Image (cartoon, rainbow, N blue to C red; front, side):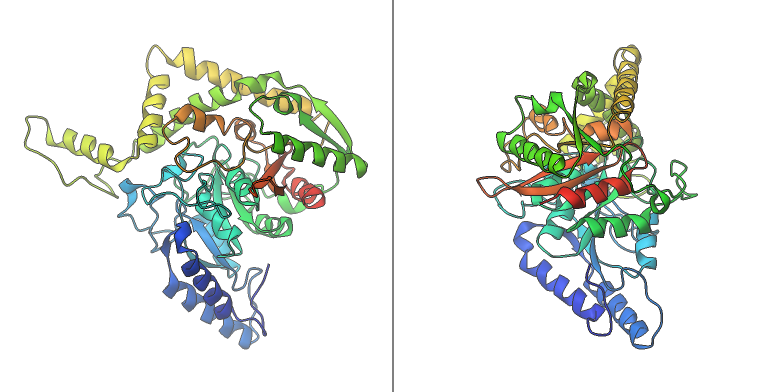
Length: 464
């Protein structure tokens, strides 16, 4: 990662970033660019360096902030209309930690509204385009973050991963992304999607950059009771079994693109050549991962989005009429109807349905039990292997508009990524070449809880 020093100024790094952002406007990466604030901070860092004062580990490094992270005095709208008028009064914990290390936020990256999507087509601001082919999707929900890194607008970007939202866009754009162990990094100050799934991570150009960022961001936060004591810097970095598994059901799936399957087989050969024991794992419970995820996650979405009512903050409808209905009811109804995207509404409706009286036991409770089966299956697998190698998504980046009106087809893109979120496992996406059409291909490594550093090191060893 390129840092500011006596020969490379923070101002020059930020100016290069801002210039590149301007050059790539057609990709629709940023929803807000904070030029004035970024240059001001860069000048302060340069002054510290000139005066011989200590600076942070990310001195002068420009980065993109996914639009669902709160950063003081910046918009924090999660690319959703209902939050377009919200300016954050606070910093997310991860933002605080990056600021303390003298990283410089240059702007907010586009995303699927409230992180609901796998393509960044569900943004109020319109879709971000793939870094290689502008007719294709960037992936989602952290599409803006991934493309910002891939096109050299920034050196790294923040992301949130609820069902693959860091890893899938990283794979679609040929960069690295980490979804940490659940609780490894603080969720405080990040707009919630699914609270038992959300993980705060990063997208970067290299595995060592992910390592540095995780060493900064990991640790317990009194503002987030789900965070774990910092294990990242002290975790064992040796693979005890020197064994890596692959999932038979994924490898044999008819939905898996042949070129991704070939990339997976190639990495298996590399692992064997490096002396790893490669183990085929049968994990039949993963058949239920996608339906389990799309029952529990919408239930959590419905709960989290109930706070947006047009009263306390954010967008409020301007079209209250004089019908006989209670005006407060109209305010709620019209604000939520106008403020939420179609995908937001779909997930709210599914979530309220599965939580409703008469259906809770049939759907939500059954899904919770299936989630436990999936966790147990992973635990059993990790008795045999240190890590599991798998596709992130069954396909490379698809065409913009191809799946946006077919939600089931879109959800199926998450079939191989949601498994890590259901089990709270760390997972690292890494690039593995390109398709015949020139599209980036990516795979992921999943490991037991607290094995984040091991996965980054292994990705570094076998990535192309």
